[in-house]
Length: 477
Ligand SMILES: Cc1cc2nc3c(=O)[nH]c(=O)nc-3n(C[C@H](O)[C@H](O)[C@H](O)COP(=O)(O)O)c2cc1C
Image (cartoon, rainbow, N blue to C red; front, side, top):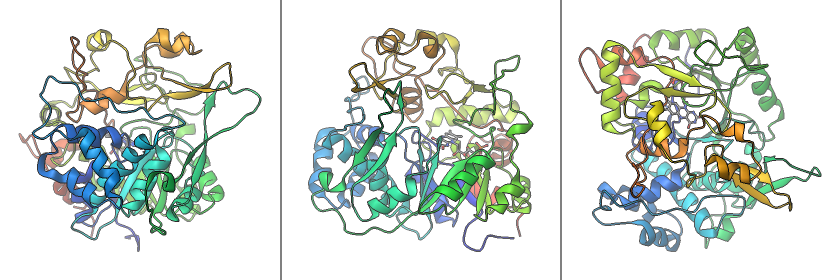
């Protein structure tokens, strides 16, 4: 049975820039829920402008922003007519910490506005935006930007986003909002908060914005139940994600055990009791290897409103991934799908992260060893309390000497990969490093690549998001 209010397909929010406005717009135009990734949109906007803003879309979206002086400054700073020369590095962008400058906040607000504005253009479908709760520092300004553009659904994963509905309520009145910052090595029980005031960034904020729906992502009944019961302002829908999903995964319950190849072992305790989820009385979508028509029927039979699908959409024409990477993966899927490794340590966050083995990317241990470790985007940094009580920021994937100098443990740096630069390289925005190699791509996707060939058809190396939707709906009455 179709859920009375919601479409059966949510297209996965895939960072950085894999689910950009083009993909979300295409999916929402078909009446399903298209989702833009809200991760690192400030760097994506700044680099799109430096690449010459082909088609003028970014500048068109920025022209619709309610504060033209703010967006003119961004265009003046970053736009390069005709694009930067290929060997020239991208201009540095301020890293966002606990006290971001007005300029850094303005870039976040404008970038999130632009992505949602473009995704919503030309249709009446619903558009969502996806954030990771672990990436705390840019979250408030980003959320406000998305709400200014009228985002319909806010999806938040990778954490316990209890405060988000209240934050949404404050931001919709363009009032100041704050949230608790997780800080390592906190002493004296002091709590630190992040804050954002729209009036400190925009000349004349809008008095009232529409309220988006809130769909948190949960990988256990415990978390789903906590969110439904404790979120003040309410949960409108749940995305229930299994550990086979692309990107970051929730770690297995209990003490972590690895199998013979070094992947985390998930056991019976990680299985999600769908009857208990259904009993929460909130519409839910199942994610993680649910990207085929049979799994959609199975999800519906279990009481779900539908499925959230990432991997199949990640390699379609409208996704932001580099064309050569898409073609290569689809080509391999015609014979034997490439290997997906659930790496327990690659992500600086400590969450398992899925890595697709593709030649010429950071999945290759030699390429990884060649890369000089440095942190210049900083989304996955952790806040820590310095001996003087002030806050500092460090990333487990930065140079180990620096991490240790900041009080971190050397063992926490081992095997960490710079996801920020790798994922940005995936979408054709690799940073150039003087006499060193440009940053290399680092692909992620779900465990199940088997359905790519069913969508593309034999011998084909491309397919559209519409084909994915037709495929998923092909057995639904
Ligand atoms: C390339 C890629 C990037 C992803 N990035 C994110 C992300 O940034 N945040 C997030 O919450 N989920 C992310 N996901 C997970 C998807 O939103 C979705 O839940 C998942 O892909 C569903 O499982 P499937 O990959 O088996 O279809 C990503 C998935 C893929 C394939």
